[in-house]
Length: 104
Image (cartoon, rainbow, N blue to C red; front, side, top):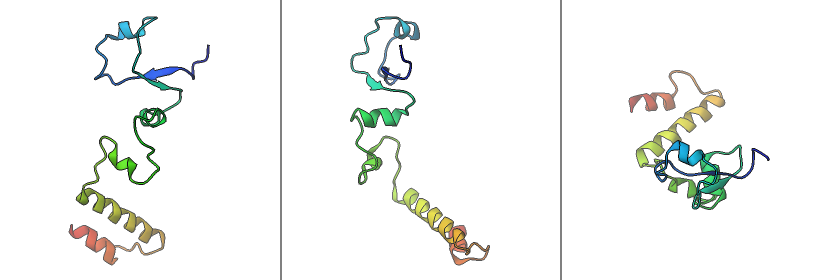
């Protein structure tokens, strides 16, 4: 018996059984997501095609919990610009980019 193969996962919101029932031999796992370990939940759901490939186009934006509102996305882009600016030696406390960020 290998412990890294033939695992299955399911959201606790979907399962109405107790932990003891789930742990019992023969528990019906029809409709659960197959997985090998180690794995992340998102990795499992991408592997079984529940979620689309996150590395293609803007698929990652369609995942639950991903907030790409214009305000959040703008702050992420600004943080990346500051990091790039700092990496190239322009990170002084009076740099125009940092001053602009502080005003917001």
